[in-house]
Structures are given as structure tokens and as C-alpha cells.
Length: 412
Image 1 (spheres, helix red, strand yellow):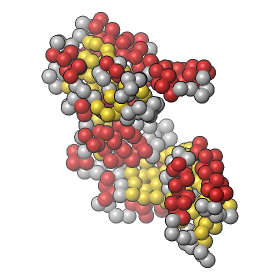
Image 2 (cartoon, rainbow, N blue to C red; image 1 turned 45 degrees about the horizontal axis):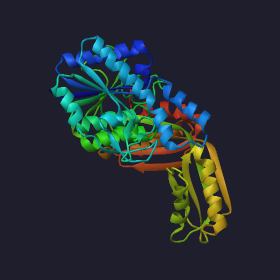
Image 3 (cartoon, helix red, strand yellow; image 1 turned 180 degrees about the vertical axis):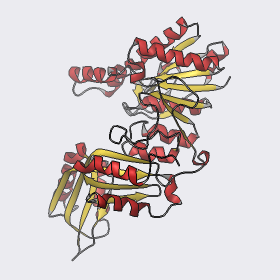
Image 4 (cartoon, rainbow, N blue to C red; image 1 turned 90 degrees about the horizontal axis):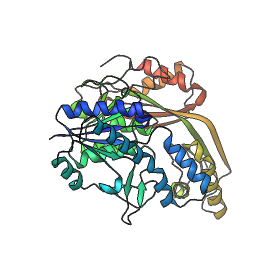
């Protein structure tokens, strides 16, 4: 039988009624002749509650026990989903990560997949079971301990199973009905996309669009897993949602497919740094060691052997970055006159594989921002992306202006 992977996020299994609705969707696919692997998240809010219990019990917790506690939310959902399917006369069995087994590294709370053997689940399918309900977000280490994959890990679990079982498709059910040209809460002209290329989705996910976890898109792109993002609150349809697929599966692309934003950004500038070979390594090495996720980097033209170095990072990593830079200065690894931080900025980006064949996208973008009197502080580009840092107070205006400039409310 062909295999289909269906993943239900926390809002889609938030209570017993929603689990029943999700089970009906699974039944529809079983009736079409599929063997189905269902990946479930914990009920909405459950993981946060479990994390709170851990922090209240042991602020300096053992990461192995942390994983044992927070993984339990998915186990509850998996069992309830299997029970509901059985009540509907669909042969189903729940699976925890160690039972599959989902083999991972030993990096607790941020584990990575090592392998997903098919034998145990394939055997159950051969015995007549139609649905394997697998707890997402978790696995088992070489030491036999429960591991978790980090927030959003159930998306990655679903894609990994689709790759391991050569699934026809991986359907991600969530509380939105697909991938939009931008956030509909900010721009009422935002339009749902029928298809989007892996590379575009990866950029959008990394730039702040929270529809799919970045690692899940990376995995899908690597193993050519067709992803469909759709809502669990709408009537099922073969045309529903957004298909994330190869660039070759998209007939024609606009220059820009979407506008993304990240609200919680900060800009930091080292004033008057020595302009010498190795200075970038001396700055960004300590930042990496401190776990600071540096994004955009700009170095000014050198004057009298001195330069300014600007970079952006998440706003919650500013204190960590300051500490790393001041410690490097104290050690004599770098020398600067001042560290200036600006935590009132945001990042706005346009993304599109069509940029490869359309000239002038940057000029259009910069003109649109100029016309709204929005000053650009930092610019970063790639083959299919242009990002700018601007004052946070102009974020919504910038998103709306760029959405209009590139005509994203209209299909290609």
C-alpha cells in the first residue's frame, strides 16, 4: 500500500473533540487505500506546562530528566488518537519514540536524527494495521535515554518518517490553511500560495515565517519529500493548502513570492576596530562560542587603519554578545572605542526564486521603502533573498508597501 504521513500540531489536537476531528481526516485517507503514519504533537499548551513543572522543580535541571518529562505530552496524544481510531473500527497502534525506534544523537533537548528503521512499523502494516500513530518531537539516544528534538520537532519528525518510508506525501495540519505571501494579520491583501519551492520556504522559515520549522524544510529539500501545509479546521480537499515542492514543479514564478519579517532583532556596532587581517575572526569567533546567532554583517570603509563593524542578532542575545565582546577586549584580542547597540530594529525580507531571472528587484524594494520615508540601516542579500534592517516602528508599513510593490495579492 502507498504510505501517507499526516502530522497534527498542538492546536489540531488541543482537546478530545479536535482529536476526534483529526481522526476523521485520517479515516478519509485510509478509505483511499493508504497506510497512514500519523505524527502528533502534545495538546496545545501542554509542553509549556511540562517545562514549567521542570523549572519549578529543578531550575538547574538534568537535561535527561527534562526530556523524559516534556516528551510525555506527545505520548498522551498518540494514545488518545489510536484509541479514537480503534473506536472508528480502524486498526491503529500508538508508538513512542523508543518503540519505533527513532534513533537520535544524545544532545538532549536538541537531538538530531540518526536513523528510523522501518521493520517494526512495516510488520504491523503487514499484520493488517492501517495506522501507526507516532509521538512526535522525541527519540532515543545510543544510551537508551529519551531525547527531544527542540521546539517544532514534530514537523521534523513527520518529514523524517516520510523520507524513511518513501511516503507519497507529508501533510502538515496546523491552524492556518497554507503558506501566505506574508502574514495576513499585518497585510489584509496577503494571498495563499498554491505552491512554493523548498528554497523559498526555507528562506521564509528562517526569516521569521512560523508555518514550518526550518529543520523540517531542510530535510524535505534534501530527500525530495513533498510537503503540504493545510488547516485541520477546514473541510478536507485534494486542492487544499500549499504544496512545498521542487522548483521544477512550479511552472512560472514571480520575482518575489513572499515578504517575511522578524520583529525581535538588534543591531550592534563596534566603533573604531583595527582594520587588520583576522579581525573578523577575532570578533565573530567569541560571538559563536557564546552562542550568539549573528545574521547580517557590514564593515565600513577603513580610515587611518580603523573601521566600524556592524552585525545583527536576536534581541534576547544582546547581553550575551556584549559580554563576549567586552571579554575579548579585556583579553586584548580586539580593541574598539565603543559598542553601540540598537534594539529598536526589525528585519524585513523579500524572497523569491524568480530573482534569479528578474533584474531590478533590489532597486524596486529600496524605492518602495524610500517612498514611505523608511531609512535602511543594514542590507543583506542572497541569490533568492534581500533583507533590510529598519526601525521597528515602520515594520508593518514596510511589509504592506513591499507586498503592494511586487503585486503579491495577484497570482502569477
